[in-house]
Length: 128
Picture 1 (cartoon, rainbow, N blue to C red):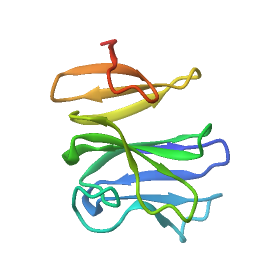
Picture 2: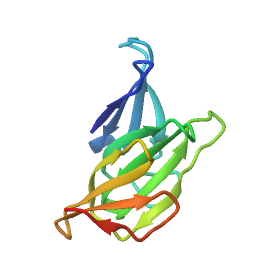
Picture 3: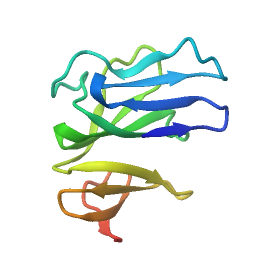
């Protein structure tokens, strides 16, 4: 998955390299690792086949489908932060979206459903 913010910053879930990459302001040569990149694993500083990512402008953070770890995680975009926090556990996350009210929509391929979550809640409302 990929996400482009209002400043043309592009973030990509680099699935096979277990990391999230970012490119700023059309600079196509200087991508940087902004989450994961510490090998495959289930530590809070690692990702395992991330499938999607979005930027939460309100908290200046990345929200990531950490597919094989069965979780949705949030990583601050501050440079001194080197690990994420778990938002949702026990989910086969494939895709993410956020609406203007900051509800998070998560596609769960294991349960064949989409749920809407209020950030901070780990129980979502079935929407599809």
